[in-house]
Image 1 (tube, rainbow, N blue to C red):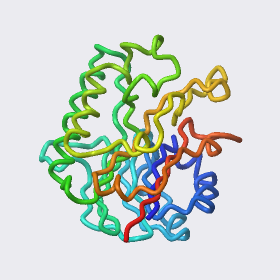
Image 2 (image 1 turned 60 degrees about the horizontal axis):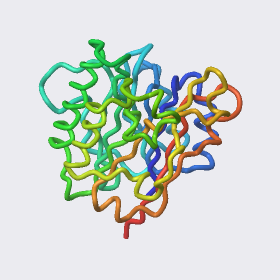
Image 3 (image 1 turned 30 degrees about the vertical axis):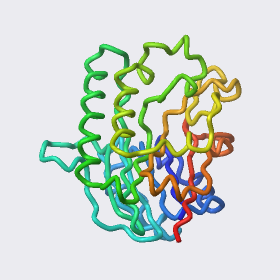
Image 4 (image 1 turned 60 degrees about the vertical axis):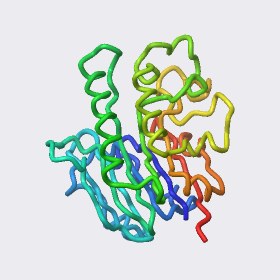
Length: 257
């Protein structure tokens, strides 16, 4: 079973690139973030032509997440499982071929101390409660997407420059640690320990070519998923060429017998 996650930074602008990538990457489950589409504008028929049934949660100009599956789409939860209002289109959950999948687009936070930063921390706290409500750490669980958090200094191109800034602050990193304490493994780090392996690069100043990036797109899996992981990679080639997203897709293959 092949699972992918990709912040496409506008599906309207990136649909042709996505169709091309799906043609060779062939994920069974594709999680998308920052579609920037309302639900009625989501290209469900285009993705159905590629074999995907999709659940999309969108609000229009901003945010937007989707889970697209070739292996079933069951037990859908839109937004948070708690009763508090949630209209930001940043979270959707579904079960695909027995794997409980949660895809997220975590708020950016702007800068440490800003009111949006505190809102981000509250959102991450709520996410941990949501995962506990909709999934069992003893089962097959994947939580993936754009977390807007680099888990440690290996995940930023210049730790000294980034130290204390949003995406790398200790409270943000502790939010990821809480998910790991619940029972999730950073699947990418299960295979790669090196620094300098990123998923996002700023469009400006040639950051991609200078390898000045961050690893903020994560795929966290339960222990059973981690044991079944055959391989995982970030497809940097998808960040090249004309009009790319500023994020590269991550794809993992699970061996499930």
